[in-house]
Length: 482
Image 1 (tube, rainbow, N blue to C red):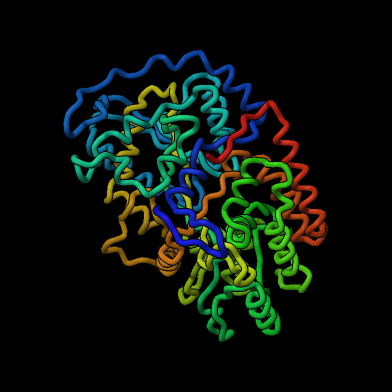
Image 2 (spheres, helix red, strand yellow):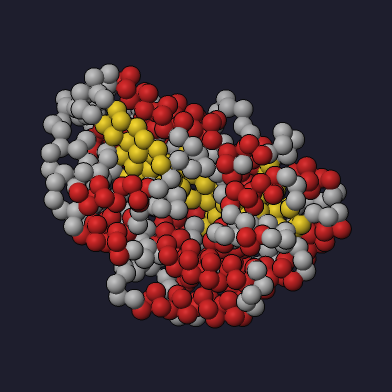
């Protein structure tokens, strides 16, 4: 991620600079009291770690070859097969080890008591609606530093460290205040506006690059009985997947930095106002699928794959998650969000892409070396290719697509990344302040506005108040872009 040319008089901001500024200092969120209590009382137990094994070229992390290993995976959009396949490689490498593998959608409900007891699993895919608050986990010293994994030789090339095989920004996203890396993001997610190329072709339309063009396409669709947009109405924090990079495109990446930093009046920036008004226009003109506010993510995706709406804001997991309802000729595609016009600070193609699917090794795990070795296996080219081919998404491994027959959505996501070039942004609000982003900005602000119950001005005022409240809350840790 290097340097870029200036746009509209703005000094160029390189992707490496964006990563450093936007990925620095990690993930913190508003903790629930129950989880704080659980972590605070989790100091007992967990000291009966297995003995280390012998360190060799084949076993650089000195895994105890006969020690049990426990893995818990989030059973969501990516399913669990990719992780089970990687587990099979571990079992083949360490045939004396008994590996316990389980999957759940209720990560916090299932694992919070075990952190409380000091007996967590060895490797956890900490994802989904019940994702444990990683800021609390790190603050309470509940996670193991993954630096040994990152400095270990990669499976494919013993002369190359694991950290040197990863996509830009992955390591930085797992850091907080310093060098330790507490989280390994396994997926690499492309966020944006998803659509059916077949549906656009049927309207004799191209993907709209400006908002006037977007409204024109939606109007053309409306005359054919097709809604312009739908979204996860019950989870309106999906809306930022396209709205936030649009704000950066219109106002520059510093606009998102100010929002992430909880700076006073950050939400009152003219670019925010412009983008909110643009999205509200979709509601006012009747371009939102009727009943959308009552749909969850699966229902909205199903309505979209059934051709009831043209566009949906989402992440690249959607191709796998919606596979069962997607027609073979749907030709799924993704684009960076439309802008307003030529006055935008960043070019069309400006995209949000970042690490996803966070894996953690608990500090009190009995077999942390085994947990890290399982991650090392997952970060090999073989496992990465398996992940990409089976779940239709990129992994953190920088490569792993050569020789694969890529699906339409994944092909489009790669093309979108190529088009974005250095214009990739990575908002951190959803990582740093989970409750603020999901429950307040998402449900209380954007959800209400898109349902027509708040005007853009009212939504901005309400969201700014939420952000100010979080900024003044001394019970949560605050982070800023560097």
